Every structure is written in C-alpha cells, then in structure tokens.
Length: 359
Image (cartoon, rainbow, N blue to C red):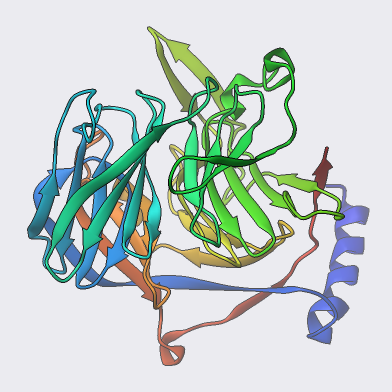
C-alpha cells in the first residue's frame, strides 16, 4: 500500500473505531484449555457429538461408532463391517448429527444413509434402518430443523435432497439438471460439509476453502440466494494450491481448514497457515457470511496437529489432538472455552464485510 493510501486508511478508521457503534464489531479473544480427555482407544474421527456425560465419535476409517465418557473411557461400541443391513464400510463414513436420540451416519462408500438409536442412559447403540441415496453420491449429510435428513450430492441431478427418516424423497433443490453442468470447472470445491442454520444451510468446501451460506433454499415465494466467501487469512501466507500425487489429493500453502462446526446462528471454522507460526484460530461467521467472532488458540497449539471436532451445549469448542504425530490417530479431546471476563484483554476491530453473491 502506498504511503498516501495508508495515511488515508488510518484517518478513516480512527473515527470509526472511536465511534463505538458506527458499524459491526469483532471481539478477538484467546481460548483457554479447560479439560483434556485422553481416549482409552485412539480413534480416527472428524466430528465429536456431545451426549450425556461424554461424546459420540464416528470412526471414518475403522467403520465404528463409539460412545466415550468424560474421562475418555469407551462405554459403547458399534462396529460391524460389511455391506449388509446395519453393516458399515470403512474409510468413507461421516457423522451427520444426533436428533432426538437418533444418530445419522452417511456411508459414502455404499451411498446410503444409516440411522441408529443412541440410548445415553443405558450407553447403548442400536441400528434402526438405512436407505439409499440417488446416483449422485453423498458428500455430506445433516438433520434439518424438523429432524429430516438433508443430503448434499454434488454430482446428482439436484445438489440438495431432503428425505424423511423412512427414506422418502420429499424435496430437492435446485431442480433437476444435467450432471455435466455442476462442478466440472472446480472439482476440489465439490467435497463439502453441510449444516442447517436458521434460514437455510451452511456449506464448507474443505479442499478449496470456500465457505457458503444458502438462504431460503426451500421457502416458497422467497428468493434463493447463495453467499460465498473465503476465510480470513491469519497471516499473509501464500495462496493455497491443490496437489495431486499418486492418486492422493493434498493442499499446499495458504490457509487450511482444520474442521468446522455449524449452529443455528454461526459457522465456525478452524484455520491455520501451514508452515507459519502462531496464528491458529477459530473464526465465526453469521448467516450473511459476515466475520463476527475470532478465537485464538492457546500458545503452543500451533505446534500440535489440532482440529475442530464439535461444540458443547455451553459453547466450549471440542478440539481433537493426535499428540503431535503427523497423520496419527485421534488420541485426546481438548475442551477450549472463552477466558473468564477478568482474564480478558478485549481487542475491538471494525469490520467491513465483503460478500460474493452467487447464483
């Protein structure tokens, strides 16, 4: 930035910051480690779902569903490998959420949704039933606000499919269309996590790094909108690029997304700059894609392989740690919460939201 432009920016921002309520604000805080739960049996899970006295972990690699208590002890295990009823395929499993005691798992290998009854008091997991999804394949799935199953199928004739718990196709959005028209220009953008918010759906493309908020996707008489943006870079790192080697896909450089959590009001993504020191953080965005919250991870977290797995009912973030072993198993859950008010050093910054509207 040239000196004249820099001076203009300073003169512009100072009165805005002093004004206090003249625009949206962001409170940046450090998170505080409140508890470490070492797992008796290491797992390979991408999400942690809180239940009474512990968490559910869906092992995407070993085809398992585990219930662990607050001390990391395994209290229930469901592990049946195969292709029959109630059997799971390893390496391509995703936890879709828990709704009224029903756990939903997307078996991407078999292209079907599987439902389980979770009894938290008896610490038991039982298979209910499953149903197939259309030929487009499953990238991600979640429960909607009414407990129905929402599936994202990037190569299907519709990207989003809404099913009843019995497997009846209720709605699809957008309408049917040619497979060739969807995603062929940006294949790394097709793999997404999804979650429902108050007015639609959040989507996180974890390879390309692009974030989305889909507004009013099913409401009749209302315009459907997709807001698309990229996460803020903690440092001035290099732009990321997709590398394909020997049948594997990896991201080099730039910001990487180390897990995401969606709530009714917020999308939280854990980001870091590979090869850089320091700025690992959890960023919070609202339904319109505006940057609202920023939580720095404690000092030293950048030296570990740590990622965002879930969020507790009280707002504490559930982080996973593999103990610093690159590509290792999940060995501990780390609960991180906002620091008590007496320990905080507020830093308020003015936000100028930048949104991209996509059709």
